[in-house]
Amino acid sequence: MTTRTPFNPTVRSLAVVIVSLMALAACDRQPVVGPEPVVSERPDHAGPATVSNANVVEVIARHDGPDYEFVLSDDVIPAGWTTFELDNHSSSTHFVYLARVPDGAITGASDEGMDLLEYWTTHITRPFQFFMDTLIDDKAPDMADFPTKYADTFFPYWFDHATPMGGPGFTGGHLTSRTTVNLEAGYYIVECYVKNAEGDFHSYDGMISLLEVRGQPSNANEPRASMHVHLSTGEIDVDQDIRPGLHTVAVHFDEQSAYSHLLGHDVHLIRLDGDWDAESTADWMNWMVPDGLVSADGMRGPGTFVGGAQTMAAGNTAYMTVRLEPGEYAWVSEVPSEVGMWETFTVPFGNPTGGR
Image (tube, rainbow, N blue to C red; front, side):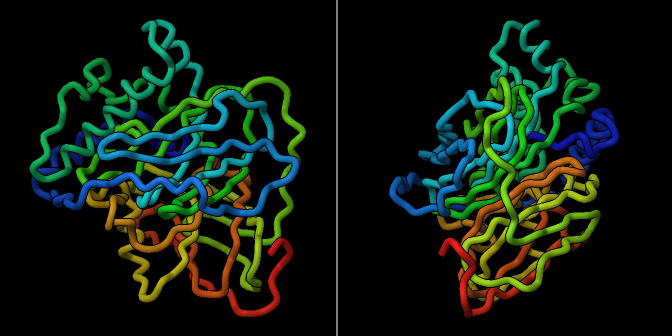
């Protein structure tokens, strides 16, 4: 897992929170139970309409028992506006979170003679799993994951400079979602930190990749929006007059904050399939809850997620492509339930937008 640390005060304060939570874990643990995920390949399922004049990276999410992976169509791309298409070939819910790797990590990997992705998983992904395991009842953390080199701060100094750069939001099994973001040259971690039935982050089990962005920007244009969502501290402001059809949703990060689960806000779209409980959905989306973010076969999560935009720093805009059928929906942010960032809306029957 990658914490979006630009919104946190310091890495040391993060370590204090983690150590404190570890001390409380024995008094407040909840079991994580559920069936094992299974492979369910769907290479022929339909996704959103093609985005023209775009720099596109396809990310296939798939897993086989304990083995999870992202398969990227390209791992070296030009800078500029880039559309990430998440093709979920499994029955579990996944997302794609992008984090720009800071220079300190690149230097550290070189000093230790390690591949950059291996260096990241050793110093970031595995320590996060160690912490998570301390919160799960009857699960013994693997001491090999404990960050002995940074025991006083838990994470290396450079982790505070990792930059969140968005990506496709929660996407249900056998669905496809698209999100477009503007990337500068550099290296990016591409990961999913949803958990399996045993409480392992998917990134810990292999659903993490490295993307290199280089050279001059591509000729991809910034998308044109047909809808707008504005995110500010504790609030989602959305267009209310919505027609069915294909939409490009501009997600504007007007403000950004750090919440009690150490992350900033983002936004995800759920198609409501009947009774829906907003607070239980928010609890499920909190990674610090032991059974939060668990999605395995038969445990898809609190609803049908159809994409969204992962966290970005204030001032950024991401664009989500989605086809809205008539029905009930909700925009939900991945923040603790006491914050209460969600908005429901109805797509009426009627004349669709273009592209249908």
